[in-house]
Image (tube, rainbow, N blue to C red; front, side, top):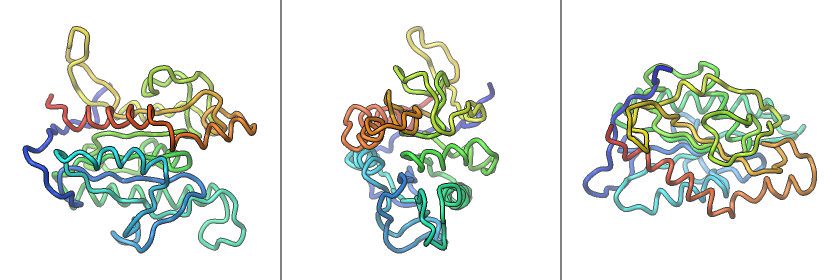
Length: 254
């Protein structure tokens, strides 16, 4: 497949405070019913503070702890609702999802235009991963915006499909609640040297994580499935794997 993302990125020589138009901007998208942030920024598309949720925050805290790479972090402003008849903004999951898609696509398109030298990283959990999946797969981004995306991490996405090439090693083979293969995600690749012989080829810049038995990314609608779905915020092995994946692309000089 032809590579959509072809930016050449490298870690800066010295640490600097992250800014929206700096080296890298991470847009985090929280899961269903996780706490919203406070205030608004960027035309109301993001929160002024917070709104990442525990799982996304755990991954992003890792990247923020590195003094050598200045990350700027935004939390997407969207309802993250499952079912709330009294919520005039989003009464159910689909309406919440659609608001997330609108705001995320608007933010990524705006970032790419306003910040031509910024690498965009997307990290989402549960409904947040579903939002990111739909933005990437359904033609909401400009070509310029696609070219600015350097890494994407999906955690416990209801769109998980067993066997997709961007799934993390050792992923289960089942499908999520909305799990049909989103082959448009396969277009998000970058050219790199591939071990063990380091031939030049293309690898996905998307990585999807799903635990066996998960309620939504494996359609296991049991109490045990719910417990697994809620466990990612304390699963350091997934944080570290996701962090390594993000770093690998942001420091790739090919």
